[in-house]
Amino acid sequence: MRLGVLADRLVLINGETAVDIERASNGRFPAEPAQLFDTWESLAEWAATVEPDAERLPLNHLQNPVPAPRQVFGIGANYRDHVEEAAAAAGVTVSLPEAPLIFTKFRSSLSGPYDAIGLPSRNVDWEVELVVVMGLRAERVTEQDAWRYVAGLTVGQDISERALQLAGPAPQFSMGKSFPGFGPMGPVLVTPDELDDPDDLEIGCVLNDRVMQKGRTSEMVFSVAELIARISAVCPLLPGDAIFTGTPAGVGAFRKPPVFLKPGDTLVSWVKGIGELRNPVTAGHGYAEGDSTRQEVKS
Image (cartoon, rainbow, N blue to C red; front, side, top):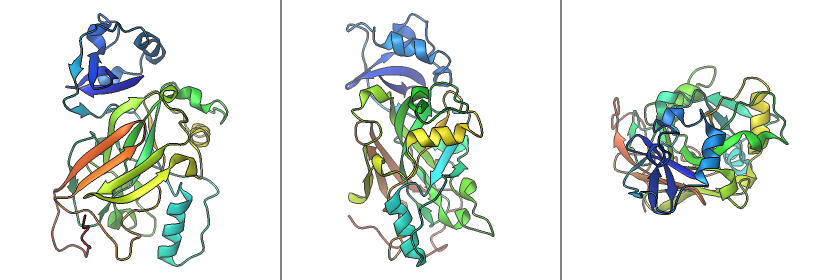
């Protein structure tokens, strides 16, 4: 099942068209995206029965398929090659984390697959990520059972203002990653059964036609199932909650010289089998041309 949001209404996606869920179900299921997970298991069963002659809608402009999660988690240092590039930039020995580095992104940072990323400064970086969305409440679940609680997967960008993220005596991950527009998600939510192997998906991003990141989700230090088990051991994961699962190597901050986003850029991010984000970059509130040194990205 592939789900999306069109004109603020839930739709079931089939190829290049969509079916309005509320209308096709004669009101059995809601149009409101925030209510998507209230009847998740029944919706999944119904979706397999949708008539072929149901009214089809064009996919004009898909929005964030999960705009209102109650909790949004982020994971740092979760790909070995990303850990290696960070260690090389700092001139230290590579050391993989013994436990996930978990932080939060605030819900107000989330945006859609084609929305603009407004820059608050010249220190803004990209991090393409697989996003896991929960379908059922998960509390103290085992790693072996974890996938059973997953509604679906989508593509995300954990946009990061590096100066704020690393300011002060303790890192400010949540604040540096939670400016408005710093969490593009989409274009669709795909149930795991639609994918040959949901633990091994190609992931990457392109900046101005230049590939900046490319990897596979099988290269995570902590798998999707282990992340769910570890987080749910501390706090319940609720239906609709989103987990940004980490990024592979290729971010701008660790390049020599560093490369950051600038107005006029286009950032394209993908997870194969799910889809792609295409986000234009603009000058946001507080942006100033002279607030840091950056290098241009040439296509």
